[in-house]
Length: 180
Image 1 (cartoon, helix red, strand yellow):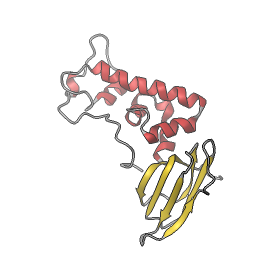
Image 2 (tube, rainbow, N blue to C red; image 1 turned 180 degrees about the vertical axis):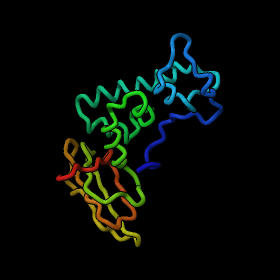
Image 3 (cartoon, one colour; image 1 turned 180 degrees about the horizontal axis):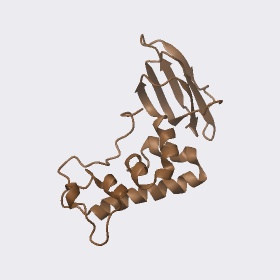
Image 4 (cartoon, rainbow, N blue to C red; image 1 turned 135 degrees about the vertical axis):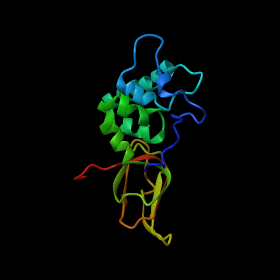
């Protein structure tokens, strides 16, 4: 859920270069590169270095996605690769489906009012557990069985009316595709 994902440190908290100062030492930035850099380059920093970090995130994610799109979505959810959420729309738009899957997913931890549906945790750790709780704190659904092991998939069915979803040692949850 938006706001639940780990902070990826993509925007500086201090003063940034104005858009008019976003110029490379040589050549020019594309419109999409300028959009990515806007509000992201700290004063006294080289815009090209910040842009390179975005391109590096795209390249890393593209390598993962080429082998396993689910693993790429999990890397976004867990914050394993910094800058991806901001870089994808501007620098590697071909990865938007991977980003969309990540945005529909959940990280380990506590989530308020999650979207109901079926979610899969790919390669959860042994001891992966989850609970869906109602507004009164009553457990609406729980799982997986105590025999969940690494290398398997855990499934969580979050019912309508879930006020809180809590998971531990499950890594990340991807929303199941329609028909699953």
